[in-house]
Image (cartoon, rainbow, N blue to C red; front, side, top):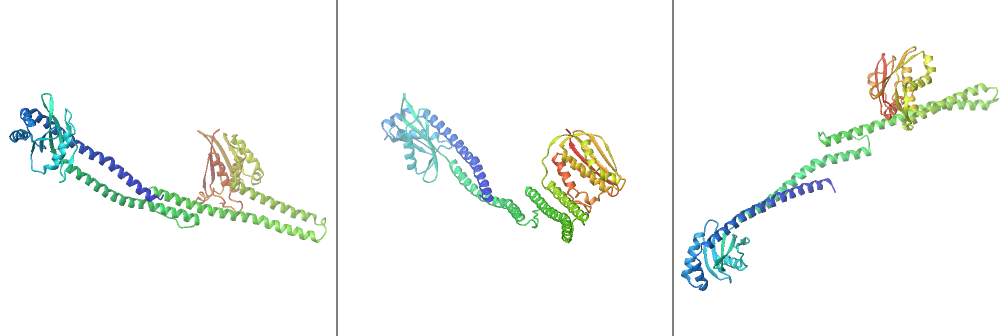
Length: 467
């Protein structure tokens, strides 16, 4: 189900439920309150009239209903009780014979008489009965109350009092108004829901098209909704992801180009020396040119070793080895890295100093790889007889390791790029050493940052969790 129908259904559902919950109870409460008030008035008047009725005249009339003078006198007595909201009174025998009837206004009494007689014949309780609300053919509403008339322990007749239920006209109007209010509200709600759904669905549709465009072509134009709401946040996140995908694509292409370039040179050397070797072998004696052949084989071996190093370097970047974490003394791993690079350090007459100690939880071979890369970078950066300083300090919760040199330094515009794959400022190298180092430090929940100034040196700082 699409989003727009869901939004419309939700708004309409909330609207209808709200009106149902609020309007219907309000309608019935108003009707019940007004009806209860009329019931009390009808019963009160009927009971008062019954107590004050001339029972002797009534007995005479019951025995002889055709005595019009007696009936007129009795009706005249009843007229005193035609107060506000009381429209008429009537007396019926238990068999339904009308004995007296008085009305406050001229009206078509035939329909009312039928209703009242049926009500009176239905049986009346000692405390009195109240009828339902009757709707007459002319649109008016009436309601009646009946009480038994007691004469010497008997109840030979019933007094019926009725009054107009004018409030029902208002109640009907309210009901009709509620219908139109609900109808108009639904129309307004649908209109607002359509507008709202447009504002909601349009950015969703645009972002969906943008995502599909990225899927088909990562170099598609970026979409900017220029919004400050959650859709704007989603748009910015999608744009950042798009930028990152393009950067990764560029990095991958650069990486593949670098691999091809790095492999091309040793392969060219192998091709040349193997061709020369083949040419010399085809000319004559092996013993005569043995030294030259060995020279060619040695160069081929070196180029093959170079190829192997290239492959291993890229494999380490693309597929990091599984870590074997254990407590490690940092200073001893630095000493191992120092010994690995000792021939180059002596050749360049560089002074390397160590200070401090600390223990971290890490992978020994990987940390050694990091320290070798950092020392090698510093060694390549310093001039002959330069200095490299390694300082280890134990801090609150972590070990800080600083490797600094007084070498050529790194230009400020390159500082944000040195951890990116295949970035290097030197003619030699693959540009993966620092990338691999950062990946290893990140894997061990540590951080690595760099500070550098041209001609003043470089400092790498690593922070790793303590044991």
